[in-house]
Every structure is written in structure tokens, then in C-alpha cells.
Length: 282
Ligand code: ATR
Image 1: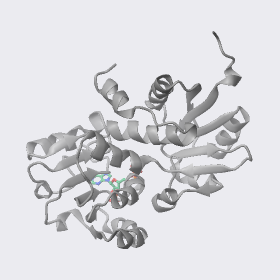
Image 2 (image 1 turned 180 degrees about the vertical axis):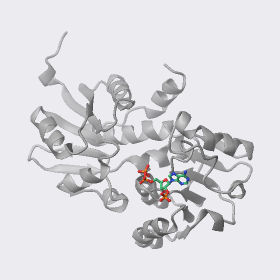
Image 3 (image 1 turned 120 degrees about the horizontal axis):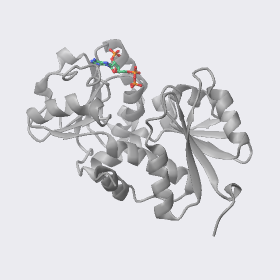
Image 4 (image 1 turned 90 degrees about the vertical axis):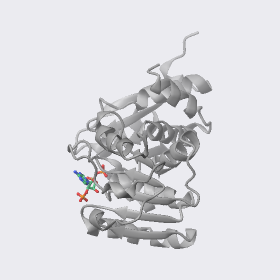
């Protein structure tokens, strides 16, 4: 049986660049496994054309979209309503277009990270001491969910200390609510070791071995890079050499997509299965 395109709901990922995005393949597999009828495309958006691209996509019948670099901040500004997670992160990665014309924004990056660490890697964040390295958009997207997952201590370390301090400041009320200790430090000032170290910088791309000293690791610490592929390799090799358990961000990518899929479709896809298939190159 064939179906007309209009019977199939349309979604996309918008970014620049976007050719590398694995989101279309992930959402196609989610749709297949859950029996949802949707089409998910890739849209390369001109750097000054984001708002227009969203209008055009809606006019085509688009129901929602994922947003990637560099439009996550603009996506927040464009939205009619923003989830608490978007307010905390200052950025959105998921838009949902409502029939009344309003645009709802959410940020599923942090949920994806937490799900990958706790469910897929089996490492608890409840009661954990966490080091978050970096204070840019990637770090901002995950700090709130890491605190909400029950970490008792989070240090944000960044080359530019003022940015770490600003990120800590914007999350201080949440940390107090969660009864978590939240600190900003420059990498050289780090002393203790941590249960979980999250690299939210693209340090491996810059050829740097690691953005923090090795004594932050202890045997068995989880060393997580939010990137995957060659962009994570330097950090993961460094972590392995120092006895930590390395993990790349492929699971975060799949899990953030699963959270977006759930928001749009009301159905939770089998993300663990899809991650396994991707790791096996299926
Ligand atoms: P993103 O949205 O990916 O987070 P960003 O907002 O430009 O990108 O932030 C990049 C982060 O990686 C910052 O924390 C940056 O440190 P600074 O604030 O000091 O610039 C960090 N970063 C980038 N390259 C780095 C490197 N080679 N070593 C250490 N930190 C690096």
C-alpha cells in the first residue's frame, strides 16, 4: 500500500553544517520500530536565514524540528513557550509546531546525556561527584539535567573561568533546590578526583590531549566525551591510559533524539536497541 506524502508527518533537523547529521537515520529507525508514519529530513540553513527557514518549513506542513549548531540560541528566541530546561540552558534543540501557530521549545540534550550515562552505561548520577569540563553551549545544555539527576557535587571547569562562573551562577538556585554543591574552577585549580568527568569542549578536535589534569580521574571513573568519532578520540585515549572508563557521545545523540521523538509523537522509541545497531554499524 502506498501513502500520499500529506498523510506522513514531516520533521527535520536544521543546522549549518548539517550534512554530517545522523538524526535522519535515527528518527527513520525510531519510526520504523514504533510504526509511526513520519518523514525526517535534513535542512541546510543559511547563517542569516533561520527564522525564514522555520516559517518555510511550517508552510510546507512541518510538525517540528531539531536544531543544531549554530541555531540553538535563535531557536529559543523564536519560540512562543520554552520549557524550564530551555531557560536553564539558554538554548533549544527541539521545536514543536502547534496547530494554533505557537512554537514550543525544549532542550533534550541533557536528558539524552543523563539517559546514556545512567541507563546505557549503567553509571548512577544519584550521589555522584561530577566534573563538567567546558562552559559553552554544550555544557550549558546539560548542567541542569545532571543536577536534577541527583549529583551531589558538580564542578564546572573551564579555560576561561568567568564563563564557568556565569554558568554556575545561572544554575545556583537549582543546585540549592537539589541540595547539590556547585563550583566553578579553572582547570589548573582542580584537586580532587571525580566519579564522572564530562568533556563538553571540542578539545580533541583542537589536537589537545585533555583540557584537565589527569589527577581528576581515578580507576573506574567514567570519562564521557559529548562528541563521538575522531572528535572524541584524544580525550577517550587519554582517559583509558589513566585507568578511567571511556565513553563517547553516540548514546547521548540517540537518547536526545528519543526524547524529541517522545515529545513529538507521544511514543518512547527503543533507543537502546538503535544505539546497539549503530555501534554494530547496522
Ligand atoms: P559549544 O556550543 O560546543 O559548547 P562554545 O560555546 O564555543 O561551543 O564553547 C566551547 C567550549 O569549549 C568552551 O568552554 C571553550 O573554552 P573557553 O570558554 O575558554 O573558550 C572550550 N574549549 C574549546 N577548545 C578548547 C581547548 N582546546 N581546550 C580547552 N577548552 C576548549
